[in-house]
Length: 139
Image 1 (spheres, one colour):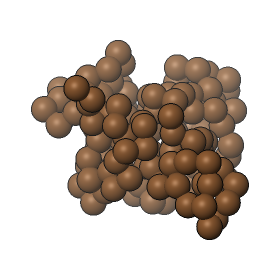
Image 2 (tube, rainbow, N blue to C red; image 1 turned 90 degrees about the vertical axis):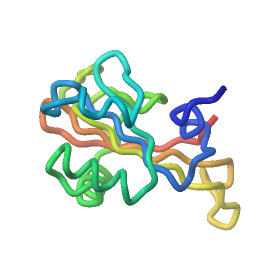
Image 3 (cartoon, one colour; image 1 turned 90 degrees about the horizontal axis):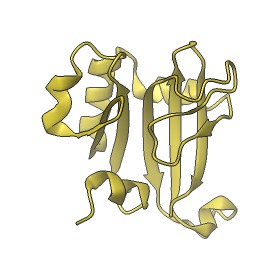
Image 4 (spheres, rainbow, N blue to C red; image 1 turned 120 degrees about the vertical axis):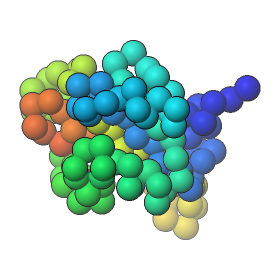
Protein backbone atom coordinates (compact mmCIF):
# COMPACT_ATOMS: atom_id res chain seq x y z
CA UNK A 1 0.00 0.00 0.00
CA UNK A 2 1.34 3.40 -0.99
CA UNK A 3 1.42 6.06 1.73
CA UNK A 4 0.23 9.63 1.16
CA UNK A 5 3.87 10.71 1.32
CA UNK A 6 5.00 8.17 -1.30
CA UNK A 7 2.13 9.17 -3.59
CA UNK A 8 3.04 12.85 -3.21
CA UNK A 9 6.72 12.23 -3.96
CA UNK A 10 5.71 10.27 -7.07
CA UNK A 11 3.75 13.30 -8.29
CA UNK A 12 0.42 11.56 -7.82
CA UNK A 13 -1.07 14.16 -5.44
CA UNK A 14 -0.87 17.52 -7.23
CA UNK A 15 -3.66 19.01 -5.12
CA UNK A 16 -1.80 18.31 -1.88
CA UNK A 17 1.07 19.98 -0.07
CA UNK A 18 3.92 18.21 1.71
CA UNK A 19 5.16 19.73 4.97
CA UNK A 20 8.16 18.50 6.93
CA UNK A 21 8.60 19.91 10.43
CA UNK A 22 11.75 19.13 12.39
CA UNK A 23 10.92 18.21 15.98
CA UNK A 24 13.00 21.16 17.26
CA UNK A 25 11.20 23.66 15.00
CA UNK A 26 7.75 23.24 16.57
CA UNK A 27 6.64 23.28 20.17
CA UNK A 28 4.67 20.02 20.14
CA UNK A 29 5.41 17.70 17.22
CA UNK A 30 3.50 14.90 18.99
CA UNK A 31 0.25 16.86 18.60
CA UNK A 32 0.62 16.54 14.82
CA UNK A 33 1.30 12.80 14.80
CA UNK A 34 -2.30 11.82 14.12
CA UNK A 35 -2.21 13.97 10.96
CA UNK A 36 1.05 12.74 9.47
CA UNK A 37 3.92 10.32 9.32
CA UNK A 38 6.67 10.37 11.93
CA UNK A 39 10.16 10.38 10.38
CA UNK A 40 13.59 10.25 11.98
CA UNK A 41 13.83 13.86 13.19
CA UNK A 42 10.31 15.17 12.79
CA UNK A 43 7.00 14.70 11.08
CA UNK A 44 5.70 14.81 7.50
CA UNK A 45 2.19 15.98 6.74
CA UNK A 46 0.59 15.56 3.30
CA UNK A 47 -2.63 17.53 3.24
CA UNK A 48 -4.89 19.35 0.82
CA UNK A 49 -3.53 22.75 -0.13
CA UNK A 50 -5.68 25.05 2.04
CA UNK A 51 -5.39 22.89 5.14
CA UNK A 52 -1.63 22.46 4.66
CA UNK A 53 -1.02 26.19 4.26
CA UNK A 54 -3.02 26.89 7.40
CA UNK A 55 -1.20 24.25 9.47
CA UNK A 56 2.18 25.40 8.13
CA UNK A 57 1.45 28.98 9.17
CA UNK A 58 0.22 27.95 12.63
CA UNK A 59 3.20 25.64 13.21
CA UNK A 60 5.91 28.00 11.94
CA UNK A 61 4.39 31.46 12.33
CA UNK A 62 5.30 32.13 8.68
CA UNK A 63 3.01 32.68 5.72
CA UNK A 64 3.84 29.73 3.43
CA UNK A 65 3.49 31.64 0.17
CA UNK A 66 5.74 34.47 1.41
CA UNK A 67 8.22 31.84 2.60
CA UNK A 68 8.20 30.11 -0.81
CA UNK A 69 8.64 33.44 -2.60
CA UNK A 70 11.65 34.25 -0.40
CA UNK A 71 13.20 30.78 -0.71
CA UNK A 72 12.82 30.84 -4.50
CA UNK A 73 15.58 33.44 -4.72
CA UNK A 74 18.23 30.93 -3.53
CA UNK A 75 18.91 27.67 -5.34
CA UNK A 76 19.80 24.75 -3.12
CA UNK A 77 19.78 20.98 -3.07
CA UNK A 78 16.66 19.51 -1.44
CA UNK A 79 16.55 15.81 -0.61
CA UNK A 80 14.14 13.91 -2.84
CA UNK A 81 12.18 12.80 0.24
CA UNK A 82 11.53 16.48 1.09
CA UNK A 83 12.84 16.21 4.68
CA UNK A 84 16.04 18.20 4.28
CA UNK A 85 18.77 19.23 1.92
CA UNK A 86 22.18 20.81 1.69
CA UNK A 87 22.13 24.46 2.63
CA UNK A 88 23.96 26.68 0.13
CA UNK A 89 24.87 29.17 2.88
CA UNK A 90 26.29 26.99 5.66
CA UNK A 91 26.72 23.61 3.95
CA UNK A 92 24.64 21.78 6.57
CA UNK A 93 22.99 18.66 5.22
CA UNK A 94 20.86 18.00 8.28
CA UNK A 95 19.84 21.52 9.28
CA UNK A 96 16.35 21.76 7.80
CA UNK A 97 13.89 23.26 10.27
CA UNK A 98 11.00 22.80 7.87
CA UNK A 99 10.20 22.02 4.25
CA UNK A 100 7.17 23.16 2.27
CA UNK A 101 6.63 21.38 -1.05
CA UNK A 102 4.02 20.94 -3.75
CA UNK A 103 3.74 19.02 -7.00
CA UNK A 104 2.88 20.51 -10.37
CA UNK A 105 1.42 18.25 -13.05
CA UNK A 106 3.32 17.68 -16.27
CA UNK A 107 2.72 20.49 -18.74
CA UNK A 108 4.03 19.95 -22.27
CA UNK A 109 2.99 23.47 -23.29
CA UNK A 110 5.41 25.04 -20.80
CA UNK A 111 8.27 22.83 -21.97
CA UNK A 112 11.61 22.27 -20.27
CA UNK A 113 11.48 20.38 -17.00
CA UNK A 114 7.68 20.56 -16.99
CA UNK A 115 7.44 18.58 -20.22
CA UNK A 116 9.45 15.74 -18.67
CA UNK A 117 6.87 14.86 -16.01
CA UNK A 118 5.28 16.03 -12.77
CA UNK A 119 7.55 18.55 -11.02
CA UNK A 120 8.14 18.76 -7.26
CA UNK A 121 8.82 22.28 -5.94
CA UNK A 122 10.43 22.30 -2.47
CA UNK A 123 11.33 25.17 -0.15
CA UNK A 124 13.57 24.72 2.91
CA UNK A 125 14.33 26.81 5.98
CA UNK A 126 17.74 25.96 7.44
CA UNK A 127 18.63 26.36 11.10
CA UNK A 128 21.28 28.93 10.03
CA UNK A 129 18.48 31.24 8.83
CA UNK A 130 18.91 30.66 5.08
CA UNK A 131 15.92 29.69 2.95
CA UNK A 132 16.42 27.93 -0.37
CA UNK A 133 14.55 25.99 -3.02
CA UNK A 134 14.87 23.19 -5.53
CA UNK A 135 12.65 21.54 -8.12
CA UNK A 136 12.86 18.23 -9.95
CA UNK A 137 10.83 15.76 -11.96
CA UNK A 138 8.97 13.30 -9.71
CA UNK A 139 9.88 9.65 -10.04
